[in-house]
Amino acid sequence: MYNILFSVLLVAIGFVLGILCIIVINHIREKSLIKKLQDMISNATKEADTIKKNMISEAKEEASKYKEQCEEDLKEKKQEVKELEERLIQREANIDRRDSNLSNRENLIDEKEKKLSDKQIEIQEEQNKIGEMKKQELELLESISHVTKEEARELILKRTEEEMSYELETFIKESENKAKLEADRKAKTLLVSSMQKYANDVTNENAVTVVNLPNDEMKGRLIGREGRNIRTIEAVTGVDLIIDDTPEAIVLSSFDPLRREIARITIETLIKDGRIHPSRIEELYDKTVKEMNTQIREYGESALYELGITKMEPELVEIIGKLYFRTSYGQNALQHSMEVAHLAGIMASEIGENVGLAKRAGLLHDIGKAVDFEMEGSHVEIGVDLAKKYKEDEVVINSIASHHGDTEATSIIANLIEIADILSASRPGARNDSLENYIKRLEQLESIANSFDGIDKSFAMQAGRELRILVKPDEVDEVKTHKIAREIKTRIEQEMQYPGTVKVTVIRETRAQEEAR
View 1 (cartoon, helix red, strand yellow):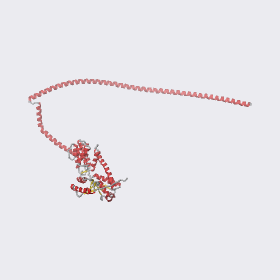
View 2 (cartoon, one colour):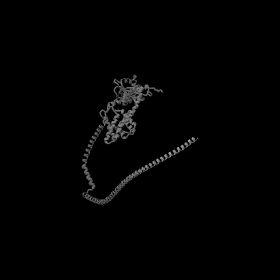
View 3 (cartoon, one colour):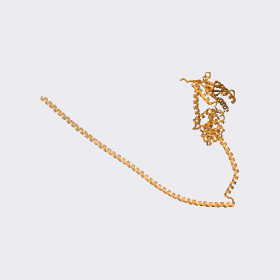
View 4 (tube, helix red, strand yellow):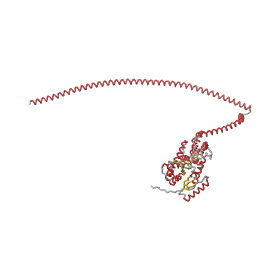
Protein backbone atom coordinates (compact mmCIF):
# COMPACT_ATOMS: atom_id res chain seq x y z
CA MET A 1 0.00 0.00 0.00
CA TYR A 2 2.73 2.48 0.99
CA ASN A 3 4.70 1.48 -2.05
CA ILE A 4 1.84 2.36 -4.27
CA LEU A 5 1.32 5.73 -2.66
CA PHE A 6 5.01 6.42 -2.87
CA SER A 7 5.05 5.55 -6.48
CA VAL A 8 2.10 7.78 -7.14
CA LEU A 9 3.74 10.57 -5.27
CA LEU A 10 6.97 10.16 -7.20
CA VAL A 11 5.03 10.24 -10.46
CA ALA A 12 3.23 13.40 -9.39
CA ILE A 13 6.46 15.03 -8.34
CA GLY A 14 8.11 14.02 -11.64
CA PHE A 15 5.15 15.42 -13.61
CA VAL A 16 5.37 18.72 -11.72
CA LEU A 17 9.13 18.89 -12.23
CA GLY A 18 8.72 18.12 -15.92
CA ILE A 19 6.21 20.94 -16.33
CA LEU A 20 8.51 23.30 -14.46
CA CYS A 21 11.44 22.31 -16.67
CA ILE A 22 9.36 22.91 -19.81
CA ILE A 23 8.28 26.31 -18.53
CA VAL A 24 11.89 27.25 -17.72
CA ILE A 25 13.12 26.08 -21.09
CA ASN A 26 10.40 28.02 -22.92
CA HIS A 27 11.20 31.10 -20.89
CA ILE A 28 14.86 30.83 -21.78
CA ARG A 29 13.97 30.38 -25.48
CA GLU A 30 11.68 33.42 -25.42
CA LYS A 31 14.42 35.56 -23.97
CA SER A 32 16.82 34.29 -26.60
CA LEU A 33 14.33 35.04 -29.40
CA ILE A 34 13.58 38.47 -28.01
CA LYS A 35 17.26 39.23 -27.89
CA LYS A 36 17.70 38.07 -31.47
CA LEU A 37 14.76 40.17 -32.55
CA GLN A 38 16.13 43.18 -30.78
CA ASP A 39 19.49 42.63 -32.43
CA MET A 40 17.82 42.34 -35.85
CA ILE A 41 15.77 45.47 -35.23
CA SER A 42 18.89 47.29 -34.12
CA ASN A 43 20.80 46.16 -37.19
CA ALA A 44 17.91 47.07 -39.50
CA THR A 45 17.68 50.49 -37.89
CA LYS A 46 21.39 51.03 -38.41
CA GLU A 47 21.18 49.91 -42.03
CA ALA A 48 18.14 52.15 -42.63
CA ASP A 49 20.00 55.10 -41.13
CA THR A 50 22.98 54.33 -43.33
CA ILE A 51 20.82 54.06 -46.48
CA LYS A 52 18.97 57.21 -45.51
CA LYS A 53 22.23 59.10 -45.06
CA ASN A 54 23.52 57.79 -48.40
CA MET A 55 20.32 58.74 -50.23
CA ILE A 56 20.29 62.16 -48.63
CA SER A 57 23.90 62.61 -49.66
CA GLU A 58 23.21 61.50 -53.23
CA ALA A 59 20.13 63.72 -53.43
CA LYS A 60 22.17 66.67 -52.22
CA GLU A 61 24.83 65.94 -54.82
CA GLU A 62 22.23 65.65 -57.63
CA ALA A 63 20.50 68.81 -56.46
CA SER A 64 23.84 70.59 -56.44
CA LYS A 65 24.63 69.37 -59.97
CA TYR A 66 21.16 70.31 -61.27
CA LYS A 67 21.46 73.72 -59.66
CA GLU A 68 24.85 74.25 -61.33
CA GLN A 69 23.41 73.11 -64.67
CA CYS A 70 20.44 75.47 -64.32
CA GLU A 71 22.77 78.32 -63.43
CA GLU A 72 24.89 77.59 -66.52
CA ASP A 73 21.77 77.42 -68.75
CA LEU A 74 20.46 80.61 -67.24
CA LYS A 75 23.81 82.24 -67.82
CA GLU A 76 23.79 81.15 -71.47
CA LYS A 77 20.22 82.39 -71.95
CA LYS A 78 21.14 85.71 -70.40
CA GLN A 79 24.12 85.94 -72.74
CA GLU A 80 21.86 85.18 -75.77
CA VAL A 81 19.32 87.74 -74.64
CA LYS A 82 22.09 90.25 -74.20
CA GLU A 83 23.40 89.55 -77.70
CA LEU A 84 19.90 89.91 -79.14
CA GLU A 85 19.46 93.19 -77.34
CA GLU A 86 22.74 94.42 -78.77
CA ARG A 87 21.69 93.38 -82.26
CA LEU A 88 18.32 95.09 -81.92
CA ILE A 89 20.02 98.20 -80.70
CA GLN A 90 22.39 98.08 -83.65
CA ARG A 91 19.48 97.53 -86.08
CA GLU A 92 17.60 100.44 -84.59
CA ALA A 93 20.68 102.58 -85.05
CA ASN A 94 21.00 101.45 -88.67
CA ILE A 95 17.31 102.14 -89.29
CA ASP A 96 17.64 105.57 -87.82
CA ARG A 97 20.66 106.19 -90.01
CA ARG A 98 18.77 105.02 -93.11
CA ASP A 99 15.80 107.18 -92.24
CA SER A 100 18.12 110.14 -91.98
CA ASN A 101 19.72 109.32 -95.35
CA LEU A 102 16.31 108.86 -96.99
CA SER A 103 15.15 112.18 -95.63
CA ASN A 104 18.26 113.84 -97.04
CA ARG A 105 17.70 112.16 -100.41
CA GLU A 106 14.09 113.26 -100.51
CA ASN A 107 15.16 116.81 -99.84
CA LEU A 108 17.76 116.62 -102.62
CA ILE A 109 15.19 115.12 -105.02
CA ASP A 110 12.72 117.84 -104.22
CA GLU A 111 15.37 120.47 -104.91
CA LYS A 112 16.32 118.77 -108.23
CA GLU A 113 12.70 118.52 -109.29
CA LYS A 114 12.24 122.16 -108.59
CA LYS A 115 15.34 123.00 -110.63
CA LEU A 116 14.19 120.75 -113.48
CA SER A 117 10.79 122.38 -113.47
CA ASP A 118 12.39 125.79 -113.70
CA LYS A 119 14.68 124.54 -116.49
CA GLN A 120 11.75 123.11 -118.43
CA ILE A 121 9.97 126.41 -118.24
CA GLU A 122 13.09 128.17 -119.56
CA ILE A 123 13.47 125.60 -122.38
CA GLN A 124 9.82 125.97 -123.36
CA GLU A 125 10.23 129.73 -123.51
CA GLU A 126 13.35 129.33 -125.68
CA GLN A 127 11.50 126.88 -128.00
CA ASN A 128 8.65 129.33 -128.38
CA LYS A 129 11.12 132.07 -129.29
CA ILE A 130 12.84 129.75 -131.85
CA GLY A 131 9.44 128.81 -133.32
CA GLU A 132 8.59 132.47 -133.77
CA MET A 133 11.96 133.08 -135.41
CA LYS A 134 11.51 130.13 -137.83
CA LYS A 135 8.03 131.33 -138.67
CA GLN A 136 9.35 134.81 -139.42
CA GLU A 137 12.18 133.35 -141.55
CA LEU A 138 9.72 131.15 -143.48
CA GLU A 139 7.45 134.12 -144.15
CA LEU A 140 10.48 136.13 -145.30
CA LEU A 141 11.58 133.29 -147.66
CA GLU A 142 8.07 132.92 -149.09
CA SER A 143 7.88 136.69 -149.71
CA ILE A 144 11.27 136.65 -151.44
CA SER A 145 10.74 133.47 -153.56
CA HIS A 146 7.01 133.98 -154.10
CA VAL A 147 6.56 130.15 -153.36
CA THR A 148 4.70 128.73 -150.37
CA LYS A 149 6.00 125.89 -148.17
CA GLU A 150 3.58 123.31 -149.64
CA GLU A 151 4.43 124.30 -153.22
CA ALA A 152 8.16 123.96 -152.46
CA ARG A 153 7.63 120.48 -150.98
CA GLU A 154 5.65 119.33 -154.03
CA LEU A 155 8.35 120.67 -156.40
CA ILE A 156 11.11 118.85 -154.51
CA LEU A 157 9.13 115.58 -154.35
CA LYS A 158 8.27 115.76 -158.05
CA ARG A 159 11.88 116.36 -159.03
CA THR A 160 13.08 113.53 -156.76
CA GLU A 161 10.44 111.18 -158.17
CA GLU A 162 11.49 111.96 -161.74
CA GLU A 163 15.14 111.34 -160.90
CA MET A 164 14.48 108.10 -158.99
CA SER A 165 11.73 106.55 -161.18
CA TYR A 166 14.18 104.85 -163.60
CA GLU A 167 16.37 103.58 -160.78
CA LEU A 168 13.31 102.27 -158.92
CA GLU A 169 12.01 100.42 -161.97
CA THR A 170 15.42 98.86 -162.56
CA PHE A 171 15.72 97.86 -158.90
CA ILE A 172 12.22 96.32 -158.83
CA LYS A 173 12.87 94.31 -161.99
CA GLU A 174 16.17 93.00 -160.66
CA SER A 175 14.53 92.15 -157.33
CA GLU A 176 11.74 90.25 -159.06
CA ASN A 177 14.19 88.20 -161.13
CA LYS A 178 16.29 87.51 -158.07
CA ALA A 179 13.21 86.49 -156.06
CA LYS A 180 12.08 84.09 -158.80
CA LEU A 181 15.50 82.46 -158.98
CA GLU A 182 15.67 82.26 -155.20
CA ALA A 183 12.15 80.77 -155.01
CA ASP A 184 13.01 78.11 -157.62
CA ARG A 185 16.22 77.29 -155.80
CA LYS A 186 14.49 77.02 -152.42
CA ALA A 187 11.68 74.91 -153.88
CA LYS A 188 14.17 72.47 -155.41
CA THR A 189 16.15 72.37 -152.17
CA LEU A 190 12.97 71.70 -150.18
CA LEU A 191 11.88 68.84 -152.48
CA VAL A 192 15.33 67.23 -152.51
CA SER A 193 15.63 67.58 -148.73
CA SER A 194 12.19 66.02 -148.21
CA MET A 195 13.00 63.08 -150.49
CA GLN A 196 16.33 62.56 -148.74
CA LYS A 197 14.70 62.56 -145.29
CA TYR A 198 12.10 60.03 -146.39
CA ALA A 199 13.67 57.37 -148.57
CA ASN A 200 11.33 54.38 -148.57
CA ASP A 201 11.99 51.15 -150.45
CA VAL A 202 10.19 50.65 -153.75
CA THR A 203 7.90 47.63 -153.66
CA ASN A 204 5.53 46.37 -156.32
CA GLU A 205 2.47 44.25 -155.68
CA ASN A 206 2.25 40.99 -157.58
CA ALA A 207 -0.81 39.18 -158.81
CA VAL A 208 0.31 35.76 -157.54
CA THR A 209 1.09 34.22 -154.15
CA VAL A 210 3.10 31.03 -153.55
CA VAL A 211 1.93 28.65 -150.80
CA ASN A 212 4.51 26.12 -149.59
CA LEU A 213 3.29 22.56 -148.93
CA PRO A 214 4.72 20.03 -146.46
CA ASN A 215 4.87 17.40 -149.23
CA ASP A 216 3.62 16.70 -152.74
CA GLU A 217 0.87 14.39 -151.46
CA MET A 218 -0.93 17.48 -150.15
CA LYS A 219 -1.57 18.57 -153.76
CA GLY A 220 -3.80 15.53 -154.28
CA ARG A 221 -5.69 16.23 -151.06
CA LEU A 222 -6.25 19.86 -152.10
CA ILE A 223 -7.59 18.72 -155.46
CA GLY A 224 -9.87 16.14 -153.79
CA ARG A 225 -11.97 13.40 -155.28
CA GLU A 226 -12.91 14.37 -158.84
CA GLY A 227 -11.59 17.88 -158.08
CA ARG A 228 -14.33 18.80 -155.59
CA ASN A 229 -11.96 20.45 -153.08
CA ILE A 230 -10.17 22.70 -155.58
CA ARG A 231 -13.50 23.69 -157.15
CA THR A 232 -14.86 24.65 -153.72
CA ILE A 233 -11.73 26.68 -152.87
CA GLU A 234 -11.86 28.58 -156.15
CA ALA A 235 -15.62 29.13 -155.87
CA VAL A 236 -15.64 30.57 -152.32
CA THR A 237 -12.39 32.57 -152.56
CA GLY A 238 -12.47 33.71 -156.21
CA VAL A 239 -8.79 32.80 -156.61
CA ASP A 240 -7.15 30.52 -159.19
CA LEU A 241 -5.16 27.58 -157.78
CA ILE A 242 -2.28 26.71 -160.10
CA ILE A 243 -1.06 23.21 -159.21
CA ASP A 244 1.83 22.21 -161.49
CA ASP A 245 5.08 20.26 -161.26
CA THR A 246 6.68 22.72 -158.87
CA PRO A 247 7.75 20.59 -155.87
CA GLU A 248 5.96 21.24 -152.57
CA ALA A 249 4.31 24.49 -153.73
CA ILE A 250 1.12 25.79 -155.33
CA VAL A 251 0.39 29.23 -156.78
CA LEU A 252 -2.62 31.45 -155.98
CA SER A 253 -3.48 33.83 -158.82
CA SER A 254 -5.83 36.82 -158.49
CA PHE A 255 -5.76 40.53 -159.22
CA ASP A 256 -7.28 41.29 -155.78
CA PRO A 257 -4.63 41.14 -153.00
CA LEU A 258 -7.33 40.76 -150.34
CA ARG A 259 -8.75 37.65 -152.03
CA ARG A 260 -5.27 36.15 -152.39
CA GLU A 261 -4.46 36.79 -148.73
CA ILE A 262 -7.74 35.26 -147.52
CA ALA A 263 -7.20 32.24 -149.81
CA ARG A 264 -3.61 31.83 -148.59
CA ILE A 265 -4.58 31.86 -144.91
CA THR A 266 -7.52 29.50 -145.58
CA ILE A 267 -5.33 26.96 -147.44
CA GLU A 268 -2.53 27.11 -144.87
CA THR A 269 -5.08 26.55 -142.10
CA LEU A 270 -6.55 23.60 -144.00
CA ILE A 271 -3.09 22.08 -144.38
CA LYS A 272 -2.39 22.39 -140.65
CA ASP A 273 -5.86 21.11 -139.73
CA GLY A 274 -5.68 18.13 -142.08
CA ARG A 275 -9.45 17.94 -142.62
CA ILE A 276 -9.87 19.01 -146.25
CA HIS A 277 -13.41 18.72 -147.61
CA PRO A 278 -15.93 21.24 -149.02
CA SER A 279 -17.84 21.98 -145.81
CA ARG A 280 -14.61 22.46 -143.84
CA ILE A 281 -13.26 24.74 -146.59
CA GLU A 282 -16.34 26.99 -146.38
CA GLU A 283 -16.19 27.02 -142.57
CA LEU A 284 -12.52 28.06 -142.48
CA TYR A 285 -13.11 30.63 -145.24
CA ASP A 286 -15.83 32.37 -143.18
CA LYS A 287 -13.58 32.31 -140.10
CA THR A 288 -10.65 33.75 -142.09
CA VAL A 289 -12.84 36.58 -143.45
CA LYS A 290 -13.73 37.61 -139.88
CA GLU A 291 -10.09 37.49 -138.79
CA MET A 292 -9.08 39.49 -141.85
CA ASN A 293 -11.52 42.26 -140.88
CA THR A 294 -9.68 42.49 -137.55
CA GLN A 295 -6.35 42.54 -139.40
CA ILE A 296 -7.58 45.34 -141.65
CA ARG A 297 -8.37 47.44 -138.58
CA GLU A 298 -4.89 46.74 -137.21
CA TYR A 299 -3.31 47.90 -140.50
CA GLY A 300 -5.20 51.19 -140.18
CA GLU A 301 -4.24 51.67 -136.53
CA SER A 302 -0.60 50.86 -137.31
CA ALA A 303 -0.54 53.53 -140.05
CA LEU A 304 -1.97 56.13 -137.66
CA TYR A 305 0.56 55.19 -134.97
CA GLU A 306 3.50 55.43 -137.37
CA LEU A 307 2.41 58.89 -138.54
CA GLY A 308 1.49 60.11 -135.05
CA ILE A 309 -2.13 60.87 -136.00
CA THR A 310 -4.80 60.70 -133.27
CA LYS A 311 -8.56 61.13 -132.90
CA MET A 312 -9.97 59.45 -135.99
CA GLU A 313 -13.33 57.69 -136.37
CA PRO A 314 -13.01 53.86 -136.03
CA GLU A 315 -14.91 53.30 -139.29
CA LEU A 316 -12.49 55.60 -141.14
CA VAL A 317 -9.54 53.75 -139.57
CA GLU A 318 -10.94 50.49 -140.95
CA ILE A 319 -11.29 52.03 -144.41
CA ILE A 320 -7.63 53.14 -144.22
CA GLY A 321 -6.67 49.54 -143.42
CA LYS A 322 -8.42 48.37 -146.60
CA LEU A 323 -5.93 50.44 -148.63
CA TYR A 324 -3.34 47.77 -147.75
CA PHE A 325 -5.14 45.46 -150.16
CA ARG A 326 -5.51 47.97 -153.00
CA THR A 327 -2.93 48.87 -155.62
CA SER A 328 -2.38 51.80 -157.96
CA TYR A 329 -0.29 50.84 -161.00
CA GLY A 330 1.26 48.05 -158.94
CA GLN A 331 2.03 50.36 -155.98
CA ASN A 332 0.46 49.45 -152.64
CA ALA A 333 -2.18 52.11 -151.90
CA LEU A 334 -1.62 52.22 -148.11
CA GLN A 335 2.15 52.43 -148.50
CA HIS A 336 1.69 55.17 -151.12
CA SER A 337 -0.66 57.14 -148.81
CA MET A 338 1.76 56.87 -145.87
CA GLU A 339 4.63 57.95 -148.12
CA VAL A 340 2.65 61.00 -149.26
CA ALA A 341 1.85 61.78 -145.59
CA HIS A 342 5.54 61.59 -144.61
CA LEU A 343 6.67 63.77 -147.52
CA ALA A 344 3.92 66.34 -146.91
CA GLY A 345 4.77 66.44 -143.20
CA ILE A 346 8.46 67.04 -143.89
CA MET A 347 7.74 69.83 -146.38
CA ALA A 348 5.18 71.40 -144.03
CA SER A 349 7.72 71.49 -141.20
CA GLU A 350 10.27 73.16 -143.51
CA ILE A 351 7.92 76.03 -144.41
CA GLY A 352 6.22 76.37 -141.01
CA GLU A 353 2.83 74.81 -141.82
CA ASN A 354 0.76 72.47 -139.61
CA VAL A 355 2.65 69.15 -139.77
CA GLY A 356 -0.14 67.05 -138.18
CA LEU A 357 -2.77 68.39 -140.57
CA ALA A 358 -0.47 67.82 -143.57
CA LYS A 359 0.13 64.18 -142.54
CA ARG A 360 -3.59 63.63 -142.02
CA ALA A 361 -4.41 65.04 -145.47
CA GLY A 362 -1.65 62.94 -147.05
CA LEU A 363 -2.90 59.72 -145.47
CA LEU A 364 -6.51 60.38 -146.55
CA HIS A 365 -5.86 61.79 -150.04
CA ASP A 366 -6.54 58.40 -151.75
CA ILE A 367 -9.05 57.07 -149.20
CA GLY A 368 -11.66 56.72 -151.96
CA LYS A 369 -9.61 53.91 -153.56
CA ALA A 370 -10.39 51.67 -150.58
CA VAL A 371 -14.10 51.52 -151.53
CA ASP A 372 -14.24 52.74 -155.14
CA PHE A 373 -15.23 49.24 -156.29
CA GLU A 374 -18.19 49.30 -153.87
CA MET A 375 -19.53 52.79 -154.67
CA GLU A 376 -20.27 54.82 -157.81
CA GLY A 377 -17.92 57.65 -158.75
CA SER A 378 -14.19 58.35 -158.96
CA HIS A 379 -11.93 57.79 -155.99
CA VAL A 380 -11.62 61.59 -155.59
CA GLU A 381 -15.39 62.10 -155.31
CA ILE A 382 -15.76 59.11 -152.98
CA GLY A 383 -12.85 60.35 -150.83
CA VAL A 384 -14.39 63.82 -150.50
CA ASP A 385 -17.75 62.30 -149.49
CA LEU A 386 -16.05 60.10 -146.87
CA ALA A 387 -14.08 63.04 -145.45
CA LYS A 388 -17.26 65.10 -145.16
CA LYS A 389 -19.14 62.16 -143.63
CA TYR A 390 -16.56 61.77 -140.87
CA LYS A 391 -16.27 65.56 -140.36
CA GLU A 392 -12.65 66.04 -141.40
CA ASP A 393 -11.05 69.49 -141.60
CA GLU A 394 -11.82 71.65 -144.63
CA VAL A 395 -8.12 71.63 -145.52
CA VAL A 396 -8.17 67.81 -145.65
CA ILE A 397 -11.32 67.80 -147.80
CA ASN A 398 -9.83 70.32 -150.24
CA SER A 399 -6.55 68.35 -150.36
CA ILE A 400 -8.47 65.21 -151.38
CA ALA A 401 -10.49 67.09 -154.00
CA SER A 402 -7.53 68.93 -155.54
CA HIS A 403 -4.66 66.39 -155.45
CA HIS A 404 -5.30 65.49 -159.14
CA GLY A 405 -6.06 69.07 -160.22
CA ASP A 406 -9.84 68.52 -160.48
CA THR A 407 -10.47 71.33 -157.98
CA GLU A 408 -8.49 74.46 -157.17
CA ALA A 409 -6.31 74.18 -154.07
CA THR A 410 -7.30 76.66 -151.36
CA SER A 411 -4.40 76.10 -148.95
CA ILE A 412 -0.64 75.57 -148.89
CA ILE A 413 -1.16 72.07 -147.46
CA ALA A 414 -3.34 71.09 -150.43
CA ASN A 415 -0.51 72.12 -152.77
CA LEU A 416 1.95 70.10 -150.67
CA ILE A 417 -0.28 67.01 -150.97
CA GLU A 418 -0.37 67.35 -154.74
CA ILE A 419 3.44 67.69 -154.86
CA ALA A 420 3.98 64.74 -152.49
CA ASP A 421 1.56 62.57 -154.51
CA ILE A 422 3.53 63.28 -157.69
CA LEU A 423 6.86 62.60 -155.94
CA SER A 424 5.65 59.26 -154.56
CA ALA A 425 4.19 58.10 -157.86
CA SER A 426 7.00 59.29 -160.13
CA ARG A 427 9.92 57.60 -158.39
CA PRO A 428 11.69 55.04 -160.63
CA GLY A 429 10.06 51.63 -160.21
CA ALA A 430 7.28 52.88 -157.95
CA ARG A 431 4.49 52.03 -160.39
CA ASN A 432 3.86 49.52 -163.16
CA ASP A 433 1.44 50.56 -165.88
CA SER A 434 1.01 47.08 -167.40
CA LEU A 435 -0.02 45.54 -164.09
CA GLU A 436 -2.55 48.31 -163.54
CA ASN A 437 -4.09 47.78 -166.97
CA TYR A 438 -4.28 44.04 -166.29
CA ILE A 439 -6.05 44.62 -162.97
CA LYS A 440 -8.44 47.14 -164.53
CA ARG A 441 -9.38 44.58 -167.19
CA LEU A 442 -10.18 41.98 -164.53
CA GLU A 443 -12.19 44.51 -162.52
CA GLN A 444 -14.13 45.46 -165.66
CA LEU A 445 -14.99 41.79 -166.25
CA GLU A 446 -16.41 41.46 -162.74
CA SER A 447 -18.21 44.80 -163.04
CA ILE A 448 -20.01 43.64 -166.20
CA ALA A 449 -21.08 40.41 -164.50
CA ASN A 450 -22.30 42.15 -161.33
CA SER A 451 -24.48 44.54 -163.33
CA PHE A 452 -26.99 41.74 -164.05
CA ASP A 453 -29.86 40.90 -161.70
CA GLY A 454 -29.65 37.73 -159.64
CA ILE A 455 -25.84 37.64 -159.47
CA ASP A 456 -24.44 36.63 -156.06
CA LYS A 457 -20.69 36.68 -156.73
CA SER A 458 -18.39 36.96 -159.74
CA PHE A 459 -14.71 36.15 -160.03
CA ALA A 460 -12.32 36.92 -162.91
CA MET A 461 -9.93 33.94 -163.01
CA GLN A 462 -7.22 32.34 -165.13
CA ALA A 463 -5.56 35.75 -165.70
CA GLY A 464 -8.80 37.09 -167.18
CA ARG A 465 -9.40 34.14 -169.48
CA GLU A 466 -12.35 32.89 -167.42
CA LEU A 467 -15.22 34.70 -165.70
CA ARG A 468 -16.89 32.49 -163.10
CA ILE A 469 -20.30 33.69 -161.85
CA LEU A 470 -22.41 32.41 -158.95
CA VAL A 471 -26.14 33.22 -159.22
CA LYS A 472 -28.85 33.21 -156.56
CA PRO A 473 -30.79 29.93 -157.12
CA ASP A 474 -34.06 31.37 -155.79
CA GLU A 475 -33.99 34.22 -158.35
CA VAL A 476 -32.41 32.55 -161.40
CA ASP A 477 -33.65 29.26 -162.89
CA GLU A 478 -31.78 26.85 -165.18
CA VAL A 479 -33.06 28.46 -168.38
CA LYS A 480 -32.16 31.97 -167.30
CA THR A 481 -28.66 30.79 -166.39
CA HIS A 482 -27.81 30.20 -170.06
CA LYS A 483 -29.39 33.52 -171.01
CA ILE A 484 -27.21 35.41 -168.48
CA ALA A 485 -24.07 33.69 -169.75
CA ARG A 486 -24.88 34.67 -173.34
CA GLU A 487 -25.70 38.30 -172.46
CA ILE A 488 -22.51 38.69 -170.42
CA LYS A 489 -20.48 37.25 -173.32
CA THR A 490 -22.08 39.76 -175.70
CA ARG A 491 -21.32 42.73 -173.44
CA ILE A 492 -17.69 41.64 -172.99
CA GLU A 493 -17.25 41.47 -176.75
CA GLN A 494 -18.82 44.92 -177.23
CA GLU A 495 -17.23 46.83 -174.35
CA MET A 496 -13.76 45.31 -173.86
CA GLN A 497 -10.55 44.74 -175.74
CA TYR A 498 -8.60 41.66 -174.66
CA PRO A 499 -6.16 39.12 -176.06
CA GLY A 500 -7.41 35.56 -176.74
CA THR A 501 -10.80 34.43 -175.43
CA VAL A 502 -12.81 34.80 -172.24
CA LYS A 503 -14.75 31.80 -170.93
CA VAL A 504 -17.98 32.75 -169.11
CA THR A 505 -19.15 30.13 -166.58
CA VAL A 506 -22.46 30.66 -164.73
CA ILE A 507 -22.99 28.37 -161.73
CA ARG A 508 -26.37 27.76 -160.10
CA GLU A 509 -26.23 25.68 -156.93
CA THR A 510 -29.16 24.73 -154.70
CA ARG A 511 -28.47 23.38 -151.22
CA ALA A 512 -30.83 21.75 -148.71
CA GLN A 513 -29.48 21.80 -145.18
CA GLU A 514 -30.94 20.66 -141.87
CA GLU A 515 -29.42 20.36 -138.42
CA ALA A 516 -30.16 17.31 -136.24
CA ARG A 517 -30.20 17.98 -132.51
